[in-house]
Amino acid sequence: MEGKALEQSILANISKQELIDLTRCLVAFKSENPPADYAAIAQFLYHEYQMAGFDVQIVAGQQDKPNVCARWKGSGESTEILLLSGHMDVVPPGEGWPHDPYAATVIDDCLSGRGTADMKGALAAQLLAVKALLKAGVRPKGDLYLFATVDDETAGTMGLRYIVREGLERLGWPKPTFHILGEASSLNLCVAFKGRMWVRITLQGRSAHGGNPQAGISAIEKMMFLLPEFLRIERMTHPLMGTDTINIGTIQGGEKTNIVPDTCTVTIDYRYVAPQTSADIEAKLRQAIAQIAARDPEVKLKEFTVFERREPKELPQDNKYFQSLKSITEEVIGRPVNFGGVLSAGDTYWTISAGIPAVFYGPGDLKVVHTNKERVPLDELDAVARIFALYALRMLG
Image (cartoon, helix red, strand yellow):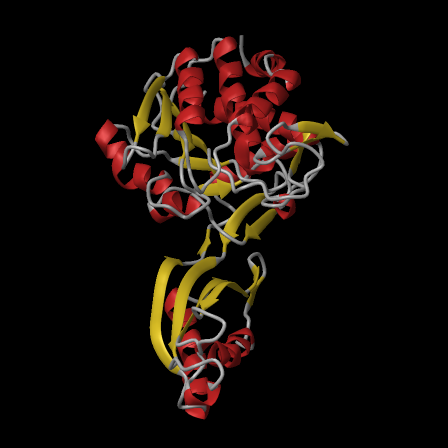
């Protein structure tokens, strides 16, 4: 069987109901991060990959961080290696859901629940796409990897970062030549990614009795003067990445109501566009602190710690892998899709940093991710499974 007949046979092997059922099954695993308990979902996916006939390995930089890595070894006639990956962890569900967030429910032709879009729907689609190839008797010329990874939601170091930097070499597996990360993109191809810097800043004050505040220096009040200065920093814009953003994520200070607080700490999430670097952003924040301190000598910086630093990434749109994926997507869904940018590279950061072309691409809208309205359209979920199958066949067949 060749050509279109083979492709039709493969697509006929993809059941929309099976895809919905598998996504529901994955959503039911409460793999919230934190606390990041992956034991049950990792065991389930290990078994699923193994039953499909793949070489399955647990790649873990530490005992409780089991990345499930499956390899479908090709005939060796091609050096191409396709990586389809997704992370197993989800953010906590929060409140306000119309149903149990871990019991994925069909509402208005969408599957609603925590993790449906971010990104257990894509994990299900990747697996069923490859199983459809197996059922049709396909033997790829190059290798295909399916990775279910850990710790994306807390920017941990034991997920795809560990696999790319150490795990593949330990297994003796070659690095992929192209990576599709199944993050929610409404099936557009995200190839431009904002940089990200997380900073912890502490101001030093002087404690005193709460009934005699003039004898102390309130670190909280000094921080209240500083934060507006941060928010006034000029924002740059990029045609795909959008505009810089700054989020004051946490603020902590003081010990008791009747004590003038001698320290105040904030953490900041700064997303920034190319061509800026993290060094540029750090300089802007330090300059803002210096400007406030020049006006008020009682503003004393105790700590300035950068605890996460990622530079912006942008890949050329004429890349052959991207063009092929765009073409197949438009063929399957019958409408144009676009190249775009996104607020974070996610796990593509590690493959791109290793010189591997990667795209942020999957079903669902990023706007509903991490909210109590998280859902994935059923037509996109079904389409992406077909797209993954056709892409793998044409790249590796």
